[in-house]
Length: 107
Image (cartoon, rainbow, N blue to C red; front, side, top):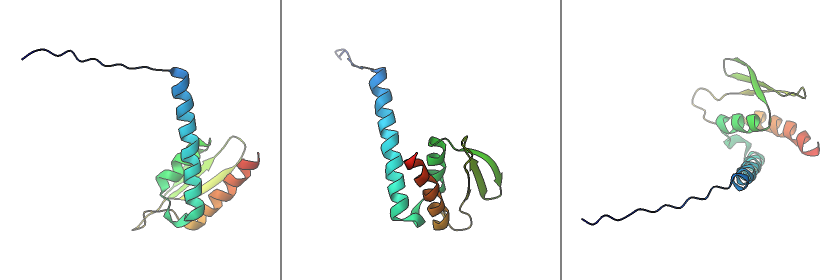
């Protein structure tokens, strides 16, 4: 068999890739917020946890299914993890989260 050389060309642009990641994170956050507004009963805890961590919240206490997050500016938020047969967060928790995040848009 003849040997065929394999050629790969990679171009890494450190600045461009960082900008793309930031843009993608912003769009993912906005998509998730829009999903929360449209159907608050259809949001999984993992999505909420990811969004809160991206926005600077830190999990500081967990008692059973209650997860409390805080942020350096003093905001505290408690989200209940779904348990039993439920796979999504309670709509009231999502509405409360949107209310807290709504203040952030004005800052």
